[in-house]
Image (cartoon, rainbow, N blue to C red; front, side):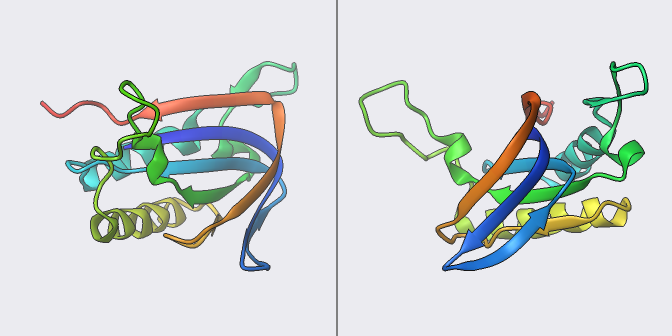
Length: 149
């Protein structure tokens, strides 16, 4: 599982002219899955995201997590995170999970986040989406779930 996290002042997803998700303070998370991702990966990533200390405290240091600041998540499915561009000029997406599996994992991941007390807005799986955001900082990180043993 791989995610791109952007600390955001605001974020919005629009599909076919309709807003499907919108946040004012929190993180925009682009979420990608590979073939061997499991519920364990989802739980690990959810814990990491909500506690990742990327929000400033009273002294201006990044010491607070999303959960500490009542931040929200705009979660966007993004299979292209597993695009391999090492050869040629066209990305190879063989490492991305098949759509059926990826959609189930994406839905489960968002539910895990909600169960942890975070408000989650989403895009629409498999759709062409227009994402806009104001990156705060800018703070952008790439996280991957730990390798399987």
